[in-house]
Length: 181
Image 1 (cartoon, rainbow, N blue to C red):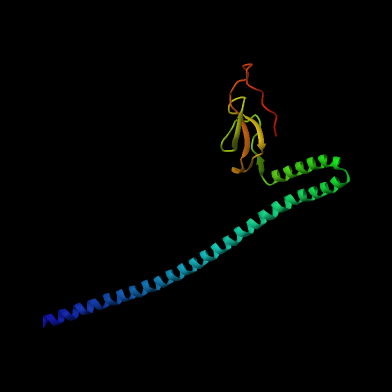
Image 2 (image 1 turned 45 degrees about the vertical axis):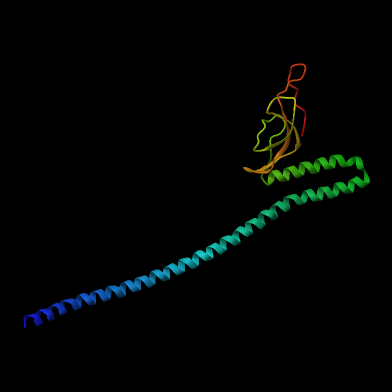
């Protein structure tokens, strides 16, 4: 009889353990559901955030173009006025074109565009494209054929330049720098 009593006692002892484990399983299931729900909400929030960022980036891109266009419209107006003067008095065109060029340069500077160093500057392959060499101080920009431009650290267009070769003239002196743009 002892074995029946022992088995009953063991069974009675195991019942609370089984109930405790069932309760723990139910608790863990509820916790898992809560975590899944939280994950799904975070995932949806993140997807919405990504969509919003794409929209904001597109909006910033459009606004940047808008500001650039607005800055350049004054130059268009100036060129149209210059053409009007050209038909009346062609000699008055030169001062007008100079004014347009100054205004356009000012507009570019207001957009953050800077010119690449030109005549007299050290040749820098990051900003200059050498298209020739002449007598003159070696490694110095002697003439600029096409101005280069930077926007911050980005090179918009390299300056096309002629560089001094360091070759001396017959007089034994380096040729003076050629005046340029």
